[in-house]
Length: 472
Image 1 (spheres, one colour):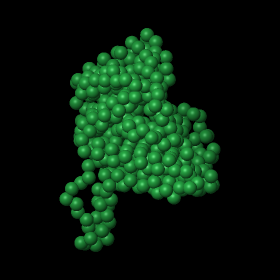
Image 2 (cartoon, rainbow, N blue to C red; image 1 turned 30 degrees about the vertical axis):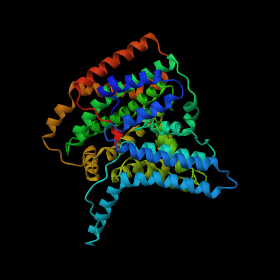
Image 3 (cartoon, helix red, strand yellow; image 1 turned 180 degrees about the vertical axis):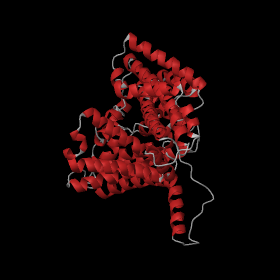
Image 4 (spheres, helix red, strand yellow; image 1 turned 90 degrees about the vertical axis):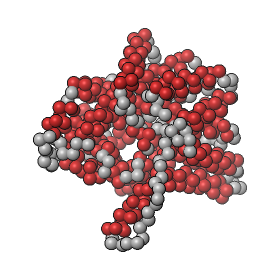
């Protein structure tokens, strides 16, 4: 079920809110859990079995870890932690990476001229919606309990509510248990919090419907066109950069807004990332919950920056390699992660010797955006060959057929130019939703209401309405 759909907006959400506020006290977590399982299982009810299995395993492991005394049951705690980690990573490995692994295994054998050892399955594993998010979130709970950074949850319903909560279930933000542990027990419900939640949700929907979808159409046209003029290729790559930002930050805004409506305060997930003046700063602003997860559970355990510049650069490369692979089972995602890891390592190892620090901030911001944009090509292209061909077009290394003029006639329609112009203003000149919704005035309420009406009208007209991060 997609947030920006008539089914969710006019049926699921109003009914859920009505039932929630009619439900007394502690029964609300049970209701939220049931609603979340209904939301998650709407497309495929079998997916709920995997999430329930992961939830049960991590609940039991957390209970074993938290209920054991460290001095007397260290081995038991370690076994429980390993069971949690292995179970969640196995779920990811089987359902997300098994097809990719088998394909590459068979290609490797074929390249080596070895026949008869290939593996062919009569079926393909279907990627369950949001599995990358809820496994990371659930797994972080047992790790935090083991570290002593969070208390273990005795109430299974509360823990199931934490794992399955539908506002952030399928595309984040990835919430650590300690961030909502107290809220699961007691949380406030005020008109101010609810109003801000509505504002967040409406602004996120406007980002998605009015900007991400329009930019996405431009990106689809250019990436499917083959060889195109270099200017069109840069235009399309920029459109995709806007699409993925407004798509994902719009979803995060809607998730945070929904959380507020139900009394939860979720952490900020985006902070104007395209205003970054370095790749390091970009990853402090982009998908903050994932960056935090990778830092806390991968980068620091690998040694962080405590073992010299070269080891730090190597750690960053490993973390971003795994971060790229987390996004998808494709060499394109691996290359995207390695590119970011290399740039992060270069910045960290060279420090102020890098070119960034020799330029004024506006130029550093522009340079960072170009680097991020180039890396997005690997993220967007369907194949590695497609990514290389597109980069060839961007740098005028490929012949441009005369038919590309027809594509230009579509790309530069007034509507698409208007969308790209507004998107640019929002990216580099507008305040963040997080700050703008802190105090709702009459003028702001009028703006939000107008954007909501326009978004709902566009939803009626648009048939193109994907959520990019639902694929991860």
